[in-house]
Image (cartoon, rainbow over all chains, first blue to last red; front, side):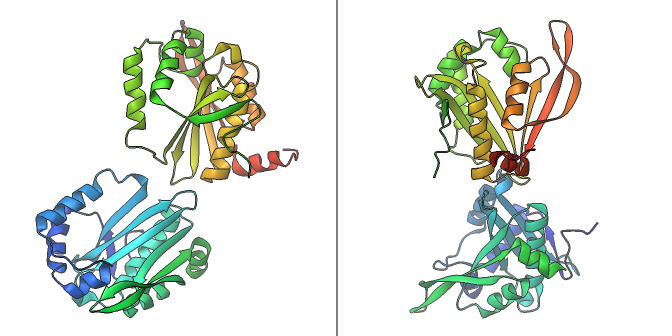
Length: 185
Length: 189
């Protein structure tokens, strides 16, 4: 049987609050990273803040939330995190959130690889019917990556985002189980 | 659209811990009911403790893993029993438990009607693929009722319960979504 935690460039690992909060505290000082990750105004935070929310987040996640950290296969280096949040069990739909905090690994296929892993996990392990994400108009690299993973454009919230005095759209993308199965063949 | 919480004889309401405890304290004194509905030895618990227990189950508000209902007779709106669905969200399966605490309503189709609502809710609203249940082999009335709803006998655990010095089996039943849908169209199974 295939190892569902291993891709071609990265692997999924359990979130260690200590390790992850240290790494994320560094990553979040990169305002470009935070603007790509999060729709709100960029904020800094102490490691303690980060650790608190991660521990709270991981406390009894139940079947609704599946969080992982992302590591390179080559050096086992921590790059970022990815999580599935099931929002509707009768529709079997989950939101996916992905962040590659380490800039050295941007634009080299690491994000696409981990997205492929999480889609397999969503459809084959959690038995979901669809996976949804939102991405920002000003993040063409992510949009391209999600398209490669099989996501389709489904809609947009116009001018929902504010950056540097300009307004941008927030895009909705989604992939259905049967679409993913077809891609797998 | 049809009212998912209303059948021919009963309607389902949300379980209210206080009301539920008030009824349970009376029902638990009926040892025959206890032996039909439960597999643990009979025990008596104060209304206060029962309420705490039901409160604890309801803690934190709605959880998609558990849907707890009270069963009311439609004619007099009397609370006559309970129905609980436990959902395995990832596998799309429901375990159901039911009990009619009011003896006057035994053997008259109230339980069957309530179970029909429970199974319909599981398939049509929750979207699961199967519903499972267990019962004591000496509960012939329940077996017949579950068969009417569409459950099929799937197996037994032999001798797991000891009652009055006699070993007895637990029976397992299940109904699949497709079977149930076919039944709704009145097609032969």
